Length: 320
Image: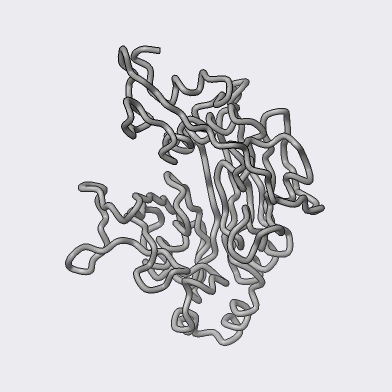
């Protein structure tokens, strides 16, 4: 094991079994080398003394939820599903037993785990009110491999959004450091410099923010001031698309967190304003998901259109 990364070496232990579990233990401070805390990337040397405190597996408090899942693909390693708007992905405040995770443990006993975590199988997530494609890992091998693809940006993710506002350019890139909003804990915001301007360059890094990159294309727009956008993600930060678009005054329809009544009143047509106010859910959809299958190496690509009733509403707004 001399010369191996610490997380790789620990993954060879039968009780730990995977690098994701090893990294989990290291991040919790349960691994010491020569009685010192080190990073996952630490290279093992001759005569290193490694101590690992493996926690006892916690009994999960998650309860199965009998909820029909729209499964697009499933094999022994993973599930690709179409998440509906309104469904929380994993347990959080106010949603302990009514989440996608609860539905997944009702659907299958095979989900990746660490040591009793409450997010079994969850490789990435969508906001509660965003619909579309998610991949779920059934084992730690698959989870680790998929997470690495997301980290290295070798996967493919395309979203569609309907916004109030019309970009001047047909395409472009939005980038910034994202962090919790300084005064509203429900929101995220781009980090500002000393002159109260958004920091648009990645260097030097900002401690309190995470770098986020969103590419956009304007697919169609109306004379009344609405646009249909395609968004391609390089990173997957919480509320990334919603923040990036709203800070450019392109507010997603039915986004009650990032859209104010002032943005709505930019629409001159009273009839159109009523249609927008009556839009039933957040107009954001994860339409395409691509990745390499961890076990077979096959390039997987999935596409999922808007729900029919939402697609009809978008058409009624004059967008294609």
